[in-house]
Image (cartoon, rainbow, N blue to C red):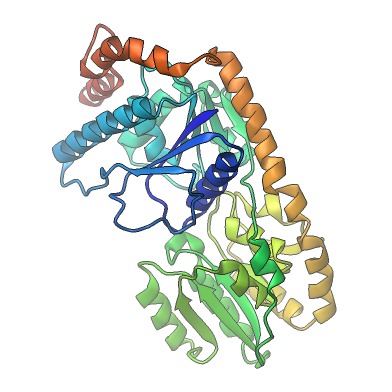
Length: 407
């Protein structure tokens, strides 16, 4: 099978990790996998790619100043993506993340190649700009399938999109070498958290919760791995709370599993999530976990009281109390940790990729694309290009502009 995956860039995010896991697994099966990214390739992918994955940076990620420039840039992106897809001659295209999904669906119009788009957040919590949201609602019904992470995410969309939607968890893959390499414990026990330093991750709430219990647990420290635009604010908050010697913000790590294995407790303080990879990976490494029960994500992974603890969404006092209880009770942490590793079975790559295999087979069967796609793409190249330049059918961009002009 030939697959083309499309994502903005291979930075250190959850969707990017999923893309790398899937691309590597499929390439290892002998499939022809092409990975298209919008960046220029000057920075290597954060996650290691199998050498058999054909990574092609498109160099179309640029800042747009103003509406006209944004339209021009996005038309250029659509043309570039279209040509890259046609060149890779895939049986199926798989796109990651909302705005990339929109561009890929525009680029693929008329090519006859089935396209699966994936949402990796809770769309009810992450609002798009009006134009992007309208394009998403116009285009998603044209996708072969729309993959979402939860029933909550599916329910956000209108019936026309729900009818094409499939709920699919992310695959959780742990580096076996990192799991086997158990380092010696530090003198201090460690609460660990991981993620971008951005508002939705709620690390400000985590610092406030830890400040309420730090004096009671002098043999514990908090380590938050990650980076982002909120670093100055988080460092300032840490210092105002008097936690300079108790809270470390060491930056990103290329060895997350080793850092998780060094810890004693994982905490997720997110205001919103999709399917939080850091939480699943922490549990796969044998860590008991505490998390806010935010609108989407943690409840799919943590079985409250069985392998972790869920705290009411945004309840800082409740988060502090749950952390303190587990920090005080070695036996309870061990009990939860013993069941936490079951996420390896519940969401392991073999199980999730088997679901993807079924979805890909159904997509190909439904679209009638089991024969060679290359000949069909080439034979239609001339006529389908007219669709982007304004053929007989009114294009989606023109319809969008008309709707905007008329209110």
